[in-house]
Length: 289
Length: 305
Image 1 (cartoon, rainbow over the protein chains, first blue to last red):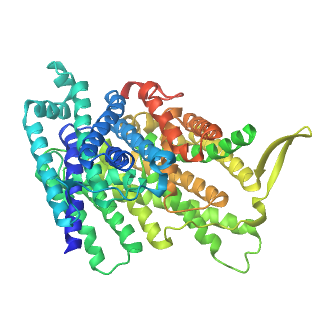
Image 2: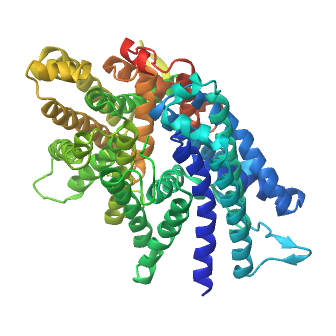
Image 3: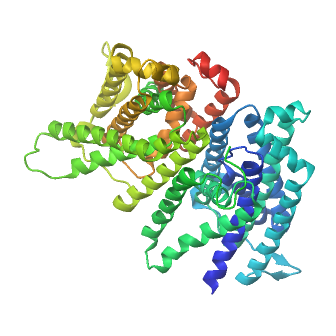
């Protein structure tokens, strides 16, 4: 039971990450390949604040998300000048740079040794330590994320995002400053990714750079594509299935030295099959850019 | 010290240049970032490892063993490259998929094969025992000690990669197939009008490009340890080198490879070695921002980027 709840918590965190990436990739059509970098920033900032200054994880979560948002400006800015697969390459590069900083800035992040003993959340002096309580917390965050992102994509702002995806030049011709919108979308996406990372850090209570590799970014992207580009319900389904499915391998009695590569192999194969057979995903409404 | 760093840079650069060259040969005909190129490099190293660890008695002469390993490795990865193209990219080409779909599919191939290797060989580092050939020579010029060491393997890497580069240049510019490859690269529709089958040229470019990556993987496996994840940073460096040199340009890929290798190694003169990847990606982003068509880039790319 504990184990099942644990998987659901992880799935919830992935839903937040997938939804925020879907806003960038699915709705706006910007191929961002470095999403894990933003959750890395969120996770490290809030953990370091909690460990070094004793700042409450609630405030740390917000500060972490804001720092991730600021970093996203640095990432988004070059992407404004690029097109298609060059954006993919640039965001990918930032993903590697941030991973590399987390790994090599040993005096701050302790590098590959990671940060142990990150405190958990507490409400009115009550420490959230049971998994079920944490699951409720994550579900609340997931609902908030769904609500906000749902509002964004159904607003006039969201229409502009879709117009950028369909035809950037046409939306510029209609007087929309597409660069501004693209940057904003990066910032919103990074904000939620930062929240996701911070929730992860305070839940696991230990983080190291290996949780935020570029492969992790690709996994999140796979969840977006699998669920469906530009579909909120698709992102939820995609993240749930792709988190839970590989766990079944464990029930087949595979040792983790086999289960871990098997899980990645499934992801890789799924990515190829999706691209070949259904690039818009399970519940996707839009063709892939 | 500085001379040793430059020398290390040249050795690393020649490997980057080989990967970048293979990447470029493929890119010129299919026009997308083929990430699966990195796993071809890894497979090359593992094939060589498997051949070299076979213990046949008659293989007392090391050089014969090496020759066989390199031959099997290069041919094997060439076939692998063609297979990947036929199974994954060919159906996508028929559907006229966008570049991003190709990019993500190649990622999928990369992740799948990397973990397959990990499943077969395990995640740990493997070493090919090359014995006394790893001993170094002190470099000296006119009897003056230059304070730099080069090993036999490094000399081999340098000569093989330079030889391959010259060979590739001759192939592209002097043979009929090379001419056809250039034609497809410039305008694949016009090429098919004059009777060149682009599919055949694409197959040939995957075979040649993958063989180059395989060669790089085998050479590096003689010099350092091998592990399943080695292809990841190799393909990244290859792509960065191609972009620095100007994507799609063969002299550009060579130049970019050496440039990246030397800059990276000079960079770790002052800062720790762990920052190498960071240095190369900062270079990439600077180039993407200010000169996306690279140093030796062609005019066509200048218009599309």
